[in-house]
Amino acid sequence: MLDSQQRQLLVIGGACGVASFVLYVLLITLSLSDAPSPYELSRTFLLAVTFPVLGIIFSYALYTLIALERQGAANRLAFLFSVAALTIVAMMFAILLAVRFGAKAYLSGIAQPGSLLRALRMLDMGLDVVFDVFLGWAMMVIALPMYRHTRLGAVWAVPSFVLGLLLIALNVATFPFPPATKGLFDIGPAIGVYNLLLSVRVMMVGLKKNSTTTSET
Image: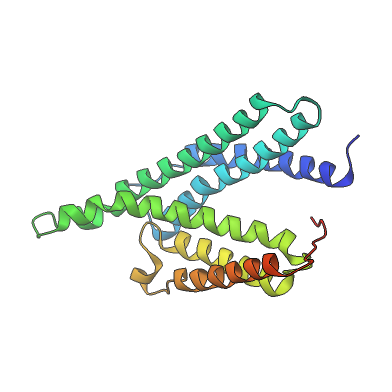
């Protein structure tokens, strides 16, 4: 019999699966011009990295549903394969968009020294943006159970959610270029400091004698 948390997960997961399909259809049907506006490029990139994230949430809900009756190696492997596939497709779209549109800014000056090398760097810049987006999602999602955690709470949850949201928003707004190169700020150092402090907090909880935690959603 399903409890309330499991039902909630299945409903949210199913809705994410539907939303993932809709976003994917929009992604492949909305065509981009050869010289898209920054808004069009950001919109397309947002679709490209959001539908895989929603797909992963759906995959976890499906994994949980099957595990209630038929947990085993096949179910675990299928979930891992799904996460890998959806992560790879997000990377693929990011590289495709970065190379197709970002590299043009450098290739237009191909006669200048270093232009070709800067254009080729769009490959790793595209991957870096995918990393930032998935990290941002991780920070926002972990903030939800962290908020009511007895050893962490809002003091740690709110910064995690805000930093994750800013990380995604800044990278989407300036894709395929880093925010710092487009007049915005690099939030990476702030995230690094936050995770350093969080690591120390986790270590302190572990070192504290008679430390207990309660199960929270």
